[in-house]
Length: 336
Length: 117
Image (cartoon, rainbow over all chains, first blue to last red; front, side, top):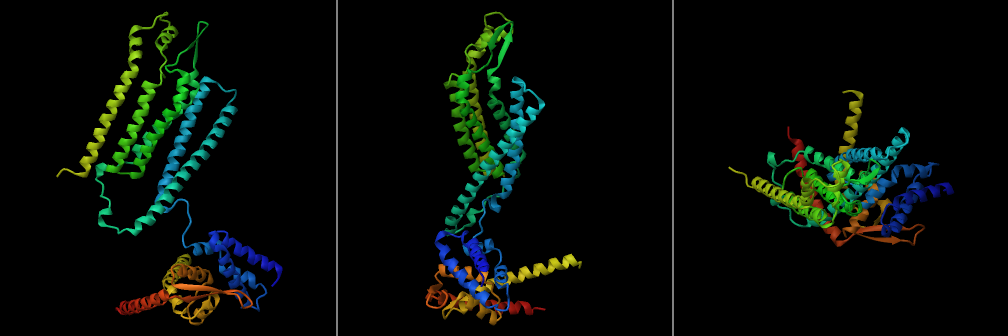
């Protein structure tokens, strides 16, 4: 045997063993060497016996798969369709969100040229797609891994007929379009909130510079992360609905719990951070030329707005929760 | 049938018959390991007895059976080249008996099925 062929065998064996757990490598390597040796010696008449044998052994990756006994994949067939759906939705949402936030940015800071608009947009889009893709894929990989781990322990227990899911009633089915529309809406809100140029809006009127902004910009910047958190929670709920596809008790509990969390954060933002610009009514009056004093009606409205919002949000949550519970309960015990 | 259809049919046949034979491989292997054998001698012996076994399938299978404690293994390093010998454990012998009985039952029933009409 020539040295070239020795090297070929080494490389083949390495290509197999590098895909195996470290503990098995040496043993498998010895075994494969001894096997290949033997197969080669069995073909003394073939000058290219090493090549023939290795070709016969086939793709090293496949051989390694057989040694491992399991297929390796990041996202299995159980999640794959949903993964693709989420990628599509997020891809669309990211595009929309970026276009909106860049448009807002350009409206307040007009760019120098069309070229810079396009350049900026392509660059931002590309970075955002890469980020979104990486996060989604990582999330699904973790879900897959978790599933496989759970699957192993669950299989030890006896499967029973009770494990079969109920066939959902027609009214319990959540069409894909419902969460998708909500998601797109959430992305638009997210984009507008995070395109912070509008916050620094300065209005020039008769040589006076006014800040008219319903929020205190410093506080707004500080609590932006909380805003985003509530949006993320809302998105999580929509993705859960999308994945489930059916209104279930579990989904209802998840929704109620997450919305409660979201409500607490929102209440804090509205009532606990001092985010509202106390001079907004006066500034509005100045800008719209109503003299120095604020419109008393508007001032009153403005002062009471946080309390009003708190009441509306709590009321909204209670109504929504009752609705969800009632709907879910009703679905589980259908009327005769 | 068109030529491409015929190709597809042939391919399908190859896959299905491979699947059919794959299930019998464990029993074939166990049956030959009452005495210690190393991987390649097993391939040759099975081949001589009409059972085609690819080394790429057989070697990983031997390891799996060892992990299931049906086979024992030892390296023989005194010869010119090291060889890993496999042999049935007590468990393996018991499993071979059970699977052989199973095989008898299956073939009996299969013959019955295939005789119909």
